Image 1 (cartoon, rainbow, N blue to C red):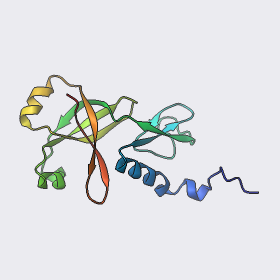
Image 2: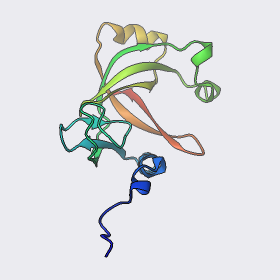
Image 3: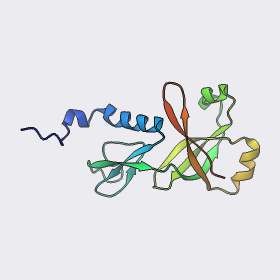
Image 4: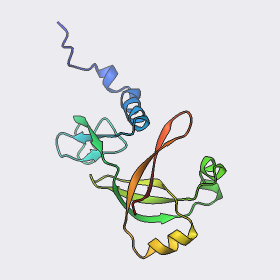
Length: 146
């Protein structure tokens, strides 16, 4: 008799299994991550196993998306987000630490050179998530939480 609550090894290691829930969540305005059942570390973006302790058993959790911008840089021509440039959006790339712990490199919308001068000495500053429809998919950016 097959246990319907168990997932097959093939299904478990299918990268679409994690990626699909993550991207669908962004489309719905929800940030999904994986939390390690052994040490409690949160994997974002989600992975099948814990990067902190190597344990294989993780469970889905949701993140608020609230955090702080720790540092940032303006992009150069080689690493510019051309789709954002085409829309005339001002942005920087920065290191964001979420309230739940994970840190990531992310796009921070709404920061021009003047705003950058205003916030540089105030870092870290609060940020909030922005779910941005890119046409074929929704992605996660951040903006200042002022």
